[in-house]
Image (cartoon, one colour):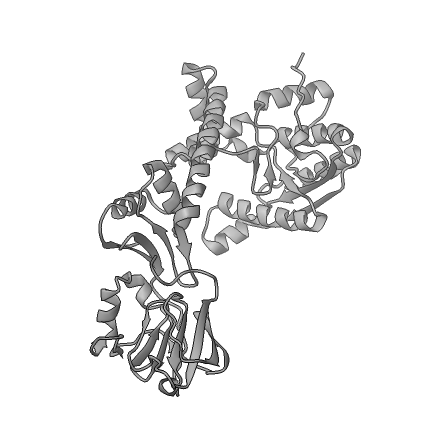
Amino acid sequence: MAQPLRPDFSDVRGRRLLIALSGGADSVALAVMLAEARKAYDLTLYAAHVDHGIRPESQEDARFCRSLCQRLGIPFESVRFDVPAEAKKQHRGLEAVGRELRYHWLREVQNRTRSDFIVLAHHMDDQAETVLMHLGRGAGPEGVCGMRRLSKGLYRPMLDYRKSELVAWLVERGFEWREDSTNQIADNPRNILRLHGIPALEQCYPQFVRATARFAQSSQIESDFIGVLTREYLTKTHGGNEFFTWLELSELPHRAIMRRAIREVCSVEGLSWEQLNALESLCHEKRGKIDLSGELMAERTGNRIYFIPKKSKAIVPVSLSLDGETACKPLCTITAAPCLPNPVKTDQSRQVLKAATLRGAVIRTRRAGDRIRPLGCGDRLLSDYLTDKKVDRPLRDFIPLVAVGNRIHWVCGYGISQEAAVSPGDEAVTLKYNEYNGGKHHAE
């Protein structure tokens, strides 16, 4: 007699669920269990089936799923894709293309049915295969966590059960299911592990699958803890604006947190082990650069590591209004108004300047040949001025400037020119700048 299976669905009580129903034993068991628990847990159920067009009998699978849902009283819909044709067109593998099409359509159905979660029938054997596949690819701590019960709109309530338990339960209850013949072909990593790898490991360790599932759960607990610490660290150190992001490195955390923070801040998809090691090493240097991809580079300077696009968004100069707001997208806005000639000394984002000096001024970023005469100093190149101000190099191209020709009269957040400084009796204008996204263009 099969062991009674009593899955706990309390974590989705009162929710709308879309069951991904393949017709295999695991998804049939899932659909039956949810249907029987529907009233107790106040669930609203829907089911969806994807025919990948790979096997001749796949249309029979769709009919079987429809009949099962009629029996269980679950609204059902299905779709058919020609995955082989699409894979050939994209020059990609059947498995990858099929998965992409399947999940895209399931998300559409989820939105249409207003379901809270897509429910998947992944079980303990699937979890063991997933952990081994991730290990084989060289995954880090997050990868060996395997699949989670609840994650990104997906719900996997069967991870505590072996496939054999689900099959025995269905047999005892008198339910049939469909067999996918492609699961018996050792032509992809998962099938190879399922057919050969895990059976061989179970000869050495009879409880290998359950032990691997426990390992995944332990890894999830520890990974979640590191995740909490990383978010706390990023709250204090992560900055960004329209153009790039950065991490403050005044105090370096534990390596586990540093590496997780780098992965979260760096926008490179599929950051390699070698790149991650190089970025971690760069955090310990005083300065340096790393080419990360065709679109992104990292630079260590000052107390930060910056992640900078190689092609920056162009900033179009905008004529400065001396009475009202001027927008220089996506850099900043500057609001101007006539005022008394009283200098501002305590607010880096506001200055009072001589109106006559600002006639014909524009808001822009720096250019070659820009010059400034700082207060109480002689005429200088803007680049030298920014170096003296210890402005990190990546920031220099995105500081808002108020300029007339190549003469800079306000480096927003840093200082004004001697020519623009007000004296008693001058016609004066107060300028206040704000960044579009609330980020900071200047170092602390």
